[in-house]
Length: 83
Image 1 (cartoon, rainbow, N blue to C red):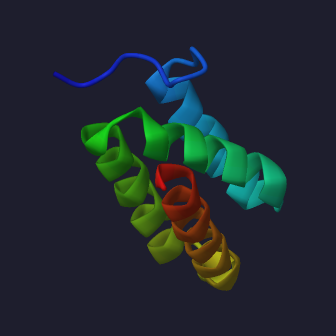
Image 2 (image 1 turned 60 degrees about the horizontal axis):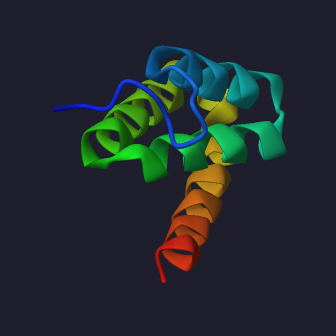
């Protein structure tokens, strides 16, 4: 069963939307926050986040480099938090 909220109580659909808006607006710290929230929720929700990141990268080529950098930071932060 997929979670309905993130660890800090945000609705999943709102968190995914906030992640996308943060990336498109160039708000890196906000995007990291939302990415981490989704990543730490559960495996299914992390999959939703990664799926959305792929869509953003394919739709908006200018944001692709920023998105790749953000994804790398999210992975590093996620690994650090799981230790």
